[in-house]
Image 1 (cartoon, helix red, strand yellow):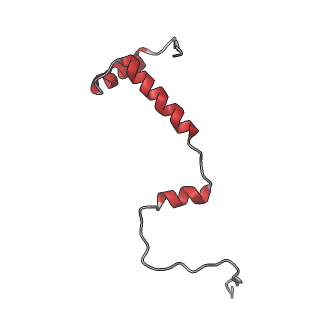
Image 2: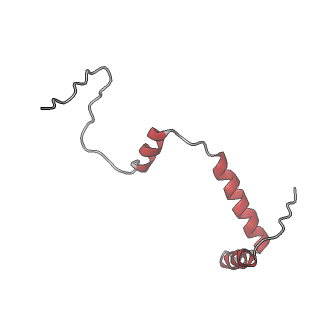
Image 3: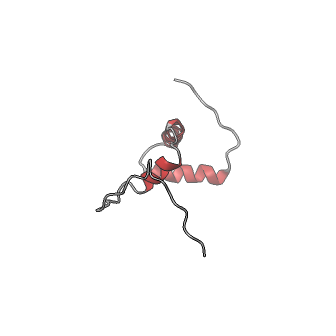
Amino acid sequence: MAQLLVRNIESEVKARLKRRAGRHGRSMEEEVRDILRRAAKQEETPKGGLGSEIAALFSKVALDAEIPELRGSKLEPPPFK
């Protein structure tokens, strides 16, 4: 396995990592490995387009009515008087 050395970490960051590791019942080194693993995995997740992002936001909402298809339909602008 590869090794990674990180220098000049702020004392507050180190203290928070140590507390976080304690809450998870593991060493600070294992906690940092887990954080890095998760961060690298998130980067690999492909991002969808805007439509995919919106669909994901509403994926747990159920609709009772059908949504009519608009493809091929002629849209008329509203009359402005």
